[in-house]
Image (cartoon, rainbow, N blue to C red; front, side, top):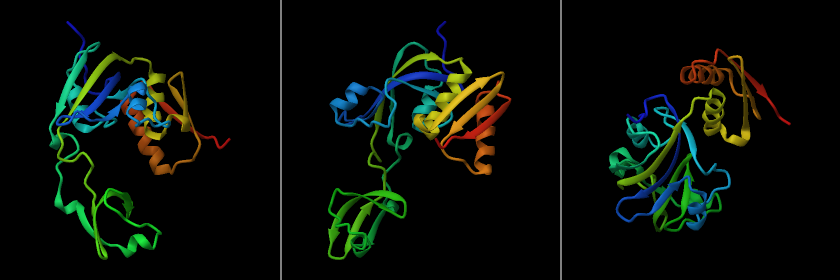
Length: 220
């Protein structure tokens, strides 16, 4: 019987996400496809992802549907809007005084992406001194479909730690080494003690063999 994914498994996957109605790609681990579609991001690690199932490292609806899928196969996973990026809601569409943008030397026009109070939105209309901004996710109310190839289950705890923290902080910003159940984590910036404690608890939960974690700040 083929092995199936369980919650808290670390798995290596490749995937491409598309909108169901017009087949438009919005996310992919395929570097060639990303470049072809002019959506390549040099800060993203392509080829595959190693994630801990159930830890929210991919879209929640997809994360939930990974459980029970067979290892070594390609699966088609369809998510309705509610379990993808949510339904479009009127409460996230705001009228904002246009002067707020002009004070920042921004001339809002329809279709422009803007950030207001740390929230990203799209300008819908500009009428006189009022600008309508939609803060819904761009894919809100859209059903989506993922093609997911599940390559294998990861058993190497050093690889688990590397990817768990790499997805969280960026692979270029963190380096890990596991020896005799002690994980040494080298980071560019020091983190607050309360953040460190929560992160330590989380790592020990998902990788139980780790008994001690040493965080080292490396500014070089």
